[in-house]
Image 1 (cartoon, rainbow, N blue to C red):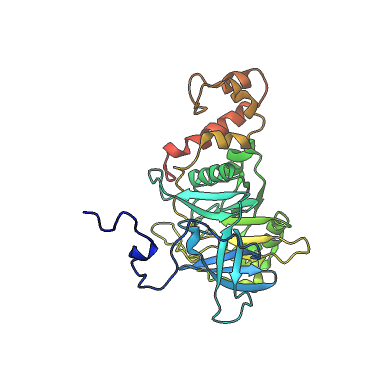
Image 2 (cartoon, one colour):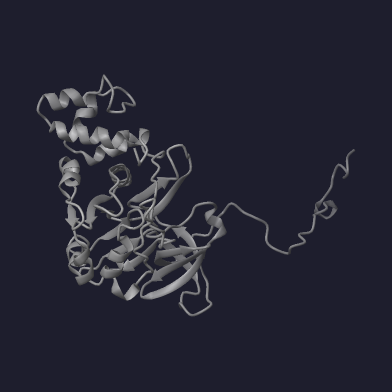
Length: 337
């Protein structure tokens, strides 16, 4: 049934009133060209603490960003009250392009990836040589995540007074990963922090490691003005520590060259469902040219892989190919295997 006549004009058209009194939605998003630049320091229940110039500002994510989440290390555009005064709240309206991303999944079957840290230059993998026992599979997975995300790895071995580091260092020798070896006594007198500090100047470094290895204790020594709660307790039955860091936090390094330290929650698993082997190979510049003859979607661990001939022709060390394949196979192996 036709509601209006043949020549209806505007006065004849009924318009449903907007009971909420707000404006109609639009797909045109504001540019916010006058937004200030900030860096996300930590995230807590939807509130993001950001550094804007020399002020700490609390903000929330704008609805126009949709499901895109900002994480620690993100460079963001912020509008609103940027005074940093108590009980003020600004708004994050844009997340800038990331230079690197540290990601993980809950396990290898989980399709949902979680961005842990953005824009870090380096990943410091902290592991104890004893109490708790080292877990090479977890180290391998952290290395893969670093190579995949564009971060350079740094291996920090603690408690060398309880067990020698030789065997573990030999396992990663072919990868050329820089390392620092420390004792418990050096943690107390500050020598450990000084050694690690040498690798952090002018860089943004994310620290990862499972609980009980001394990760947060080391971060506290590196940034003494911002101490985080630590426990130093390892369960005598399971050999595992208790999580003391529940959220990632970026802290400024006291150094003329600058730098940031990002402490992350202790991990017991590091899923790699999101990893593409074609990105990991970029961390092996001596092997990457040899992949030109590989079949499409080559896993680099199959019969027709061209890397075998590349190494046989003397272009790269066989130990490097072995290390690459060991890292890529971590998706098929559990951390405790």
